[in-house]
Image: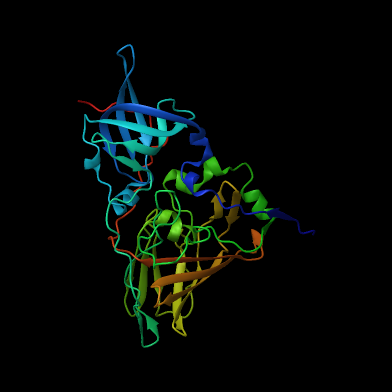
Length: 358
């Protein structure tokens, strides 16, 4: 039997289109709209401002413009009180492609004349300073909240939760390493599928334990005991339990998106071995889809830098049934100065525009 492989080149998407993709809004078509606020929804994966625009003939046209995720807005100090019902705002943004009276907000002029950019910070950031030792008896003490640095107004990495002088992470949750070659089975698993239609996160579903940990800079929570470490993801609500009291995986694992994880301490690092995944995607983005089967095996190595207070994860994923070689990556999160909150996804992207009552 001949063995066929198909080469998949992984392309890291531009952060600005990370959620809605290039299909929902047209960045080449900028609009400026003025209207009276009717409703504000700070939900995940995207908040929305709803407002009524009075046309030259007196007719009223309802509009809505998309914001960051609600939990990220709150992390940046935004509140619904910024947009009082009935107050006039002027929004600049990218025109909706399929929805003519919608946009992706780039900036907004509030009723008092102040201007907010999409990624503006409205609170004093409590970034970690100095060093902090989390190692005790050869074990890291990881309990607490962790997040990647926030964006600044220009859309790059900001200073929230990041040690001074550090740059942006190279590729938010996307991994790297050599291009992957799909097997015949892997190719068949994605036949007829597309990023725009079948990406799990467009349907309020988690993608995988690698991508979701750092994606979009949500706040994660770690709860640590002697026997287990629980990772609660701020994106799409993955909950992982790392069993520290087991040396081998059981035989009766029920496949899940989170998989089954066992951990051990090695020279001050946390090593996590995970199997038992339900079939899904190792990569799902504009650069293409790379599937994984239930044979996916992931090894993560968490290390902590006391000087920067950064928790770095190096990972390797292998799945010989669907691809050859290894999918590898690295990411870093820092202590967060805001609490964890569940993602509680409410996808409004395809919802019909509803005109609020009253």
